[in-house]
Image 1 (tube, rainbow, N blue to C red):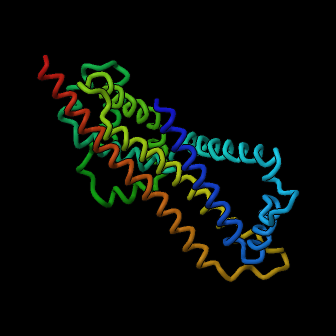
Image 2: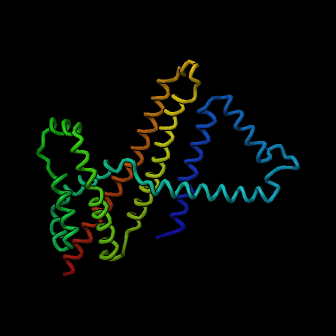
Image 3: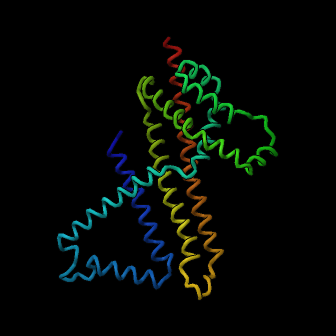
Length: 265
């Protein structure tokens, strides 16, 4: 694991999250609240260059350290949360498996029983291409279908880890830089999309809970829904597009490694 690269990713994703929070609590909560927040922040960090400026004291340095730690911890937490679109990621992964069954069949037969079983279950779930469009739309309304897919999450992680390990062990040059870059981009995009999704949920919460009980509700419902829909679509696009590119590299390199192994024998 490249700790430098991982900490850079944590810093970037944590910074994106807190920038979104600052924008939400200033611009998103109204001009008056935003102006009060900025004035309070400016007086606290000593923007007026007074002698009691906190940045000129040891407390300022300590605050800076706590801020940096908070940013990195936030990035770490976002990465640990994982993808909120993992069901769609699993569907993309299953689609790549169904398109590569010719060489995956031979490769998994030589592996442990656990991996072979995981592959078989995934192939049965995602490999049926003869189903009608009517059935595809009907099963989306069936909770049992989604629960069955949800139970495959451990098999999905096993197969993905197996392919990454297979490339790392058997590839002539180890893990490809291209695959490593795609994995880093996917993990970063996944964390940023989680941050955007949290902000989208906060937008809805502010719309419904920031006015008093006897106050007329905000007349910005359509705009709130537009902001929420835009953030949600952007978060999904960031995750799924980057994950699909990573899967292309993962399966292509796995196929090339498997072919190289066969030729070597």
